Length: 191
Ligand SMILES: *[C@@H]1O[C@H](CO)[C@@H](O)[C@H](O)[C@H]1NC(C)=O
Ligand SMILES: *[C@@H]1O[C@H](CO)[C@@H](O)[C@H](O)[C@H]1NC(C)=O
Ligand SMILES: *[C@@H]1O[C@H](CO)[C@@H](O)[C@H](O)[C@H]1NC(C)=O
Image 1: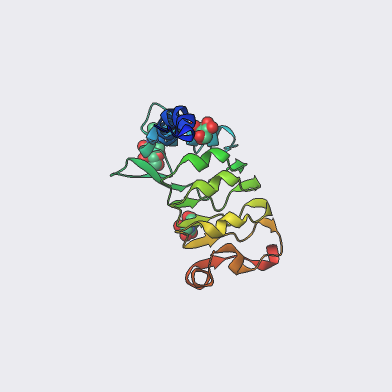
Image 2 (image 1 turned 135 degrees about the vertical axis):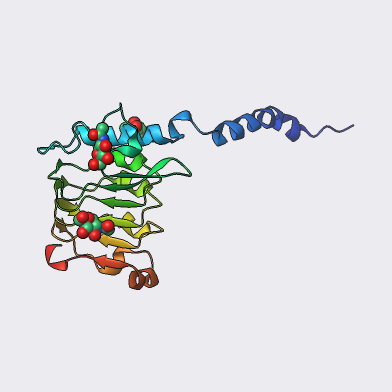
């Protein structure tokens, strides 16, 4: 009887292979997100922010549920943070990369503050974002191209910041069609 040597040779690999497939499919615990993830992200954001009026100081506290914090709205079905509205709150500081962990975020409004620095690339993870309002801050840098690939983005307001770059409006959205449909307020004079 002729034994196919090539099969024998591969047998040990075939035994091990399912293990690799299963282990690569299993989610590492760090990527399982829930309301605690949102809480950690918001507290990390708060830590980096100067808050002269004390808007967040006592309100964003672990002794109260995240969904009762000022500026926060949650989705009752998933019990996750969907809306962050800190407009006109005199806040100053960078936009924390940790915000990228609030994976159910639909609306992000920080207009009318003194946020500065670049937009962190982690925000590209917010695939459910529909509304971004960054008007009236001091944000700078080149507008990141991932803004154009946020699949649900409907409105992007970036007026009165210090962004630079010679981008066209359509660069921001992934297709011309979306480009016409979404309401983009980019003041080209400030780019
Ligand atoms: C956000 O997620 C990243 C990647 O999973 C993790 O390293 C980071 O610690 C998280 N931030 C917070 C505040 O939980
Ligand atoms: C935080 O602010 C919200 C909105 O103003 C308010 O409803 C809530 O009671 C405040 N929580 C605390 C603990 O002050
Ligand atoms: C953000 O907040 C400002 C001030 O409250 C409001 O005028 C604006 O419409 C809000 N933007 C979005 C996208 O909801």
